[in-house]
Length: 200
Image 1 (cartoon, rainbow, N blue to C red):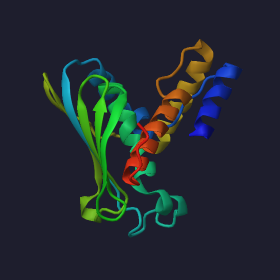
Image 2 (cartoon, helix red, strand yellow):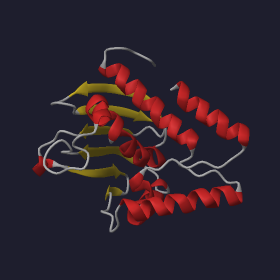
Image 3 (cartoon, rainbow, N blue to C red):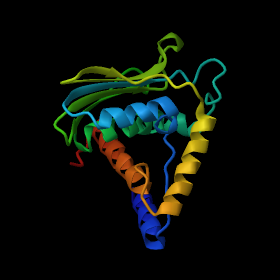
Image 4 (cartoon, rainbow, N blue to C red):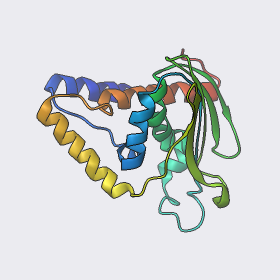
């Protein structure tokens, strides 16, 4: 995490804009959905599942050494958190972190709004079980993350536009370097719990 803090300090010192690219956060329909849910009060709980099958078939990530080393926690974990935090608030505590099959991990998170969430992450799910979804439940009922009509390339272009806008206006983007650092801190806490260590 020292490297992440150094990045944030360098950004602040230079007074430059920053944007961390979380793919789904910059896809049109999910981005609009996140803004709508963040403006809705009374969320009680959330369930997020990011299940991949990247080491099978013709996946372009099948021979990725760092994914094999770090697993789903560090590959798809940031994407799940990038959607949960804007709606449920910061994570006050990683209440539980346990291993599942292969690289699968299960997290229970306590959020600043008083809501809780469960997160299941895997890169080694059976291909027929792969997919990502997020469901919120609260006072207004249930809300489910919509599928995006576009892939990663348009999302990357939108992230670049967001960086340019932040540089032009001087307003920090919600996915700035500080947000990226916070996501890293939460994942590091989860990793420590998985290893039987306590950091909170």
